[in-house]
Each structure stands twice: as structure tokens, then as C-alpha cells.
Length: 295
Image 1 (cartoon, rainbow, N blue to C red):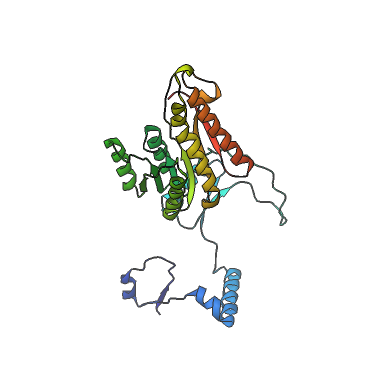
Image 2: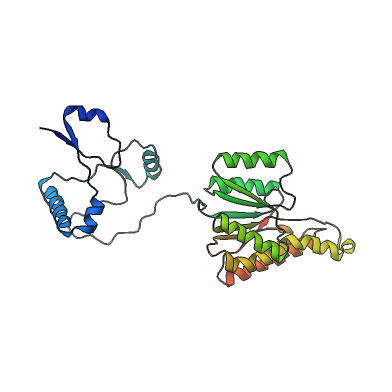
């Protein structure tokens, strides 16, 4: 009498055929779609198998609610058979399920980036930008757009980009001038073609520090352009172009919230940028400004 082997999405060694073994392939999904009689027959076979004990549940490896990390590590090892289950409460003694009581389970909050979305970092080739990009990559980002009007200039910038590319990350250097309407719109459109934009981070900053009596209108404009003007255009165009946006984050400074001698223009630029983020939230769009201290 020949043996029969069942295999679901797993390799079958040719040596088993030496022992007068037959292998039968059934595409149950196709059968269930087209033949009603066959559907009923398959259902009857499964029901009968459950009643006779021929069909049994998959083996399970059960962990309690304090072993969540161990459960994920066990599953990630690929050595288990069947299902990995987290037990959050005991089964009821009766057949009627009771209303569950709330349970508090210890967990460490962690931000993850969507691997199918792109993330734009304005001023992303600076030291702060490279660190943020590396953080995004470790959190799952696979499409990165770094803006810089001068492009890659240092060996360290090139080294970091190569490291990310070796991890399978697509890194694009965009030289669009986001302080202009055309440049900001072009940046968002090109990034959307790479992958739907999931996050916009404005880290750009230009300093023209001086006491107020030594400041000029040109100094104020130079400092305001990468923060106020760029943020204004990114806000304006992202509302229509970036329909899947999760993050709109601007890097501000304590020079805005608390003031800093010689940085009147810088404080004003950051303050205006924060007001844009506030208006975004009022309109129902993501918008966050972070007042960083000395770094």
C-alpha cells in the first residue's frame, strides 16, 4: 500500500518517492471557488475529521503576558511548528465568555517608519540630518530623500549614504531650492514618485548672529528663508500632494522659546515656523515643532 504525504508550501524531498509514495496536489482555493458540490464535500470531510479526531488543531507554543519579548524572539528564530500564542487571561470555566477585565501589560513605546513610504529631510546632509536619517533607517524607513543645494561634499556624508544603501535603503539627494514655490513643489512631487511621502522633516538652518543694532534686513531674510519660507511652501503643497503624510516636523530652538543674545532673527524665524505647525494642527494635518537646546 502506497504512502501519502501532505505538504503545504514546503519542500518535498525526492527520496520519499523511493518508498512507493504518491504525492497528490490539490488547489483547494481554486476548488472552493468554482465547484459547489466539491465545496460541500470538503466541508463535510473537515467536519467529520474534527469529530473523529483526524483533524486536530495546530500545535501551539504558549507564552504568558509577561513573556511577549520571548515569544517574538522564539517566533523570529524560525524553529517553531504551529502557532505562537500569547495568553493574556485564563479560559472561563463555563461555555459563556465573560466580559474581560482590562489588563495592563508592560511595553516599551517605539516609533516605526513605514517601509513603503518616503521620508524627506530638508537639510538632511548636515550632522543633525545624518543622525536623524540613521534613526529613521533603524526604525524601518527604506526610502530617504535628503535635500541639499550643494549635494554631497564630505567623505563622511558619502560613507553614511553607502552604509544605508548596503542595508537596502534607497537614498536620493535632491538639490531643489525649497525656499521657492517651484522648488518645494518639485521636491514633493519627485519624492511621491519614489514612494508616497510619509514624513517631512525641516532641519535647515542658517545663522547670522549679531546684536540687534548690527542686524540688517538681509540678515533676517537669510535666516528666515530656510525656516519660514521653506516651511510655508512645504505646508502649502503637502496638503494636496502628500495625502499619506504621517509626520510634518520642524526643528526649532530654545532661542525662540527663551531667547538668546545675538539671535533675534533666528528666534523670530523659529517662532514663525512653530506658528505654521500650530495652524496645521488646527486644520487637521500633522505638525510638530521641537525646540532643541544646545547641541
